[in-house]
Amino acid sequence: MSNFMDITVKKEIRPCIVDGSTPALFHCWSEESYIHIAVLKEDVSGVVKGTVGILEFKDGHIEKRKPEDIQFTDKLFSQYI
Image (tube, rainbow, N blue to C red):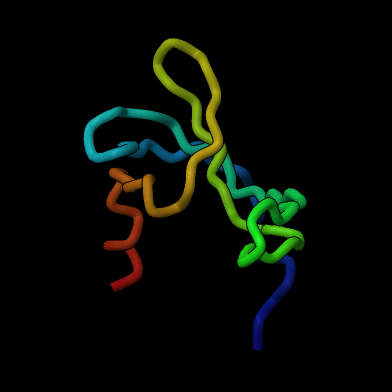
């Protein structure tokens, strides 16, 4: 049986590569949404939602990026297999 006293939650920054070559630091995942208003007859209006990563770059600027643009480089996955 699990002992809940052993659970530790902490936010860690992870090194990553963006767009295949740009180094960055990953801070967290976030959800974003916006309202799309149909302009063309075949378009559909509605709310568009998605997940984005919050990244910090070497020069200090912050960007939101799609998950498919991010590749983690810390080999954290190897601890679990």
